Image (cartoon, rainbow, N blue to C red):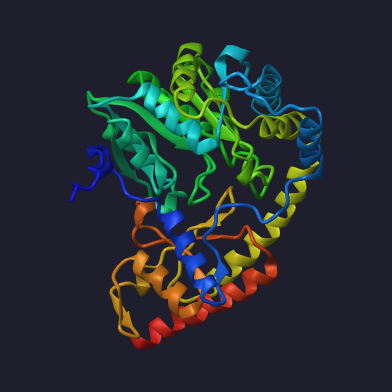
Length: 404
């Protein structure tokens, strides 16, 4: 009998995505007929706006179904350049832009291009689940720096300074953040920029949620505040969240030309170009009518207020109001270290499993976000579903409290 295929050693460095795992378990329970309210999936419940779909349909009719340049068409790069100038006050040339198959793909390519064995990269926690594992796949070591709920989960200059060693090459800034919704003031960015400049670090600016901000918060770009750091900054974004295009898979990077050239080489040996039809839709999204963003943001604002009010009324739960994105990240410390219905709840992942299997509501435990006492709840779903899900969540927490 032949031996099984040996897997690569690099797989020992990483684990499956926690959010993907919850999605898979949710689908399994629904196939069994279970009624589950989904608070786990990080995508808008809105349909892609009509003018974007129309642009893609027209591209199909026009026969735009062939290979494109690896990093995207010139028309798409021009649309990205237009967006960066309009929304961020940033100026780029086509050779400094690459489009990829989603924001995650953009980050993966960037990490592969700029980091290597022995490098350290500062990652503020809580962090998006894939940062650490993608850095490990590039050979780098994520240096996790905890932030405080009372400080809005924002990385401080002192904490950044304290994490830097001779091996530190970069820092990730995600504003607004997944999972916390944390976002940085202009003064925060300038103060962080001073530390970054002093240590000659690379900044990876993950801007995927930048258009989704609340309460009059003004989202300033890191490079708008620290333009002198442009030569060492990698700007990553996508059309997924802002334009309800998660399944279209289109992300993009703005970076120094030699970095983009390296990323293009990597992409050319993996996926080649993003889908040609998706590129046509992305052009309409980035350079076309932007009113759809405001429409979605108005609804997200209503939902955010509702969820915060419900969480604020539950004894033992604390939750900082997110400045952006479409998540809340409540702290559940008061409910941990207990048992209910034969289930031991030692960390947020246990709590998430309890909510899913016993209460019929899917959330994501905070361990893989670097926050084992928190859960992530998305409010990118209807108010009706939010009400039902919060009712189930509240009943579940009351059951835990009563069992203590």
